[in-house]
Length: 262
Ligand code: GEK
Image (cartoon, rainbow, N blue to C red; front, side):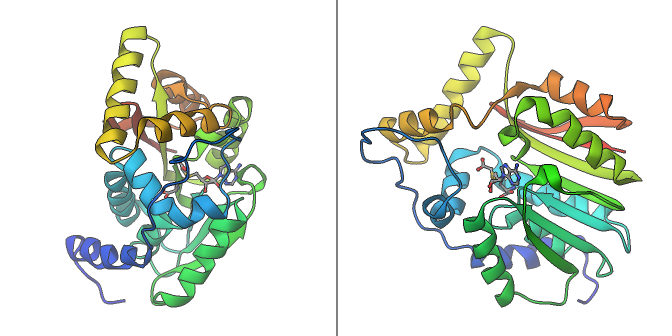
């Protein structure tokens, strides 16, 4: 790939994201007799780009900054990890902005997501760094010689008691100076702040066309699988693993993204 100024490379990669099809998310639009637990199955994978864009305020900013962070921090011959990659929106951004000598691991335990990602990768350019896709649980992956690790909205699906060991093993497999990016839905200790941020997030979803029924049924489905924690809990745990610097670089309502330097 020719050497481009980073702003040109950002534009270049946005053309790739058009390969993600945008079927509309109507999964919870009809009343369900019983709302089952949320799963990253075929029905979700089919509508995922639309679902996440209409549900997570600032998702596109998270992707854009993953691109920028990769460009600055990915070192030659190192490994990059997109943990809980879904359809590979962040993978794609990282791939084009890492040195071509890097290896990028895109990992997700949803077969529906990984199958679609593999199909899509067959169609995209091979001039950027190598990608290895893994249908696997991120808790059983061994991170090694990593310069950039991304947990974009994934840690929230890992049981709380397993978050520290996961982050510790990521830390231990990173190069000094390597960067970990963690984006999460978060909660608040203060009851009024919790209510205000939740209300603003619900307004965001309404403004993006979700009905009250869709919002209520999805919330029920996610109740047990997506467990939020406060930013303080996240930051303290990241520091406890040995990361020397943690910064919140993005916040919008009840979503936040942190970068940590090993
Ligand atoms: C993006 N990062 O577009 N092991 C592997 N994968 C997991 C695990 C696990 N233990 N738990 C959940 N997942 C993406 C968005 S979505 C966020 C990430 C959301 C996977 C799960 O299968 C799903 O694909 C992803 O994590 C979460 O930048 O849906 O809110």
